[in-house]
Length: 440
Image 1 (cartoon, one colour):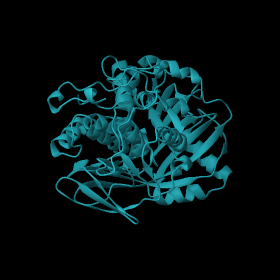
Image 2: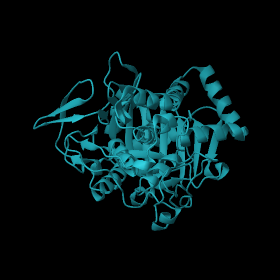
Image 3: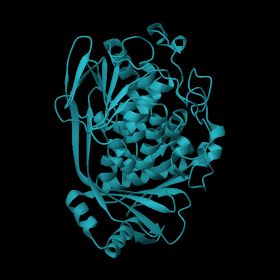
Image 4: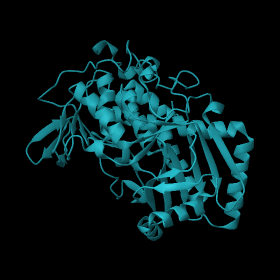
């Protein structure tokens, strides 16, 4: 596929992302009333840029190079695996180093909100059909104790779904199966203890050996605080669980802003995934409540639009905003949570990681040295607007809807009312959440 690579002079001739080139709807998805992907989705797939076949087809990857690995990905979670597949789909090759046992991502209990744009990327990577995902037909947004509400719908935006909800385990399993089927390099139990700098390459040191790479992509862990990072501690934690209701959810997601913090309900299968944000000490108390007491508190904060009848075991995760000022440095790139850790209020973290991985794969396909400074600078510039807009949008929601001042409540109500009355404003918010802020 060497004839498909483009040179640095092609900087202004970049291939479109899956949703570029038109209104952006891309492949049609399942009807909003369905709860899982079906095999019939296969015929809906679109080809990758500059490929002649579907993303579902067999990968054609470059040969292994034992002397110089070229690209090393530290972290075999969903973000790292997605990057490896994106590179392979365009004829490249990278080696993943995972500290845990291979398959650990298959046991990840977290819930992921996948935008329609993310579905397009996952389709083109050839993994979408293997992911058990529930479509979101509409999102109802309201605030507790105040006026104003709005509803975003897939039908209004001309999309099959605004997004989808899946477990991280399902996404991880689909990506891992695709890596294994393509025989892409994946080293398990290979924690990278340190990375030693060099002018033309980096040396990765594990407990058992060493390797050389021209580019190292860090795709695991959280952003390390320091001079290269911006942090904001929200003083909040998220209580995560699943809830059952007395009526069907109708594939409607809910975002309810309360005095404690945002409360999100996401349809997954026949249940609702609950992301209940509140101050840290309150989160621990909530998680420890008996089921009946927890459901009573949940009902109090959510209101009567739905009636809750059961709940699963609760888990608690602390919430902070932390992001690197730049996702690149000398022969290094940070991806996913290693580049930015976001509040889950709008479910944008993994969607941003997928867009970053897709763009990075494109930037690495147009020359011989994947880690040279001009190439990484182009990647950072291409992603700057979307990255910073997504970070700012998420942080702004938390701060705007987290204030308990009377004027803040009034402003929120006016804003929600305006969204409900102005379809163009709803369209702007919906498409920002679906496709990100495009800088190209």
